[in-house]
Image (cartoon, rainbow, N blue to C red; front, top):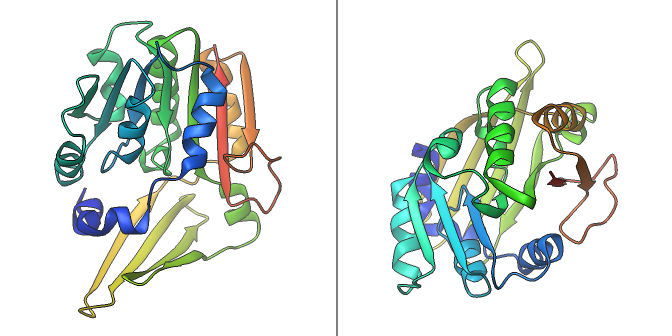
Length: 242
């Protein structure tokens, strides 16, 4: 995707590894030493690399080749870690049934899908790939908060290297969002502007689609610390079991 290719060199500075994500995965699936994990939208691989240190096998998939190149450069030839260019809607045709202890989809990846039908297809494929005790773990922005409160931007990410502004324009007629970003590189003053269309799927619709896909245990949280999901929670974190 053009958006991620344009920011790939600075991606780790914008979105460094979040240790609470690792803790959330471990808490969801228990002992990880014998586990196989599928990381959807792996980006530059930070989460996949850390999970591979404590798991039997990790597969990281993404659509952006520039992100995957950076992931492969960092992985230090870990023999239990694999990266692949793959559409998240094609996972069911690439891996056998009951292959993974967890399918992980963090970083607002889910809402890059084009429709609720696509989300449903992803949920169904994920369920088929999970072992009987496996978990689907997802994190997106809480779009109930965005839509119901008329939120037009997310908090700006800023550090000594960069400033990353994130703005939303919700279109009620199409029920889609324009996600406009401005990435400013402080040393050079360079600005990288992008617009990406997102599918702002609501919690109730996610729950319905998960149930239709056959997930029997569905939990929602307001962050990776498993705090209660509130109306003004920014993240929406999901744990779904078969």
